[in-house]
Each structure stands twice: as C-alpha cells, then as structure tokens.
Picture 1 (cartoon, rainbow, N blue to C red):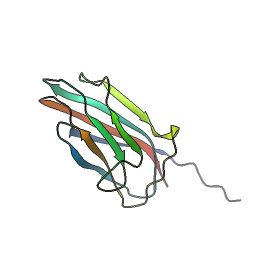
Picture 2: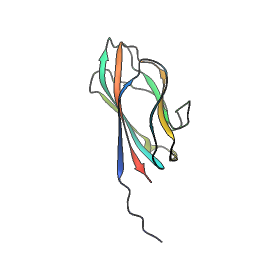
Picture 3: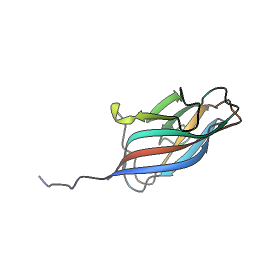
Length: 125
C-alpha cells in the first residue's frame, strides 16, 4: 500500500457578508476536491438589531443546503460573537474541483446592519 503524505488544513476567510436579506451568496469556488470540516461565522458589524439570520451552507448551486441544513445564528447578536458549526460530526460529501460553495440566507436578520465574516476550514486533496 502506498503512503500518501498528510494533507494540510486550509482556512478560507470571506469577510463583509451581509445577512440582512434573503437569498444565495457564493463564498468561494474550490481549487481541488475539498473536504469541509467547520463553518464559523463572526459578527463584525451590527446596528438596530432585533433578530438573527437563518442560513444553510453547501455546494448544490441555487440551494446551498447539502452540507449544513438551515440553522439560526442563535446568540450571535453583538460584534465579535462567533458561532461554529462542526461539519465533521455529520455525514457530508466532499466537494468536487471548480464547484461553487456558498450560503443560502433563508431568514434575513432583522437589523439595519448585520455583517460578518465566514471562515471555512477543510482539506484540499
């Protein structure tokens, strides 16, 4: 059996994503087969806050919901609040090369401003 060198964890950071309206947003396109492990959201700007957004994450085009089903960002109401989704605790598929990866905001945050940064960790093959 051949030995393959271990892969290095990749960290992909996407800043300035507003969650005050519904719809899909592409975050990045894979450069090779990608194995997602975590999705982290950090709130970086908020004003006139009432309620958090609900979003899903995935690689299936217009829905972006095949990796993480729609989940509310419960508790993320102040700048620097962070919520992490551990994707390796469930069965997820790897993502093929040149595939768009994104979010689907199914419930918009009720706020004048609700903007944050997404950090995705995973391994490229």
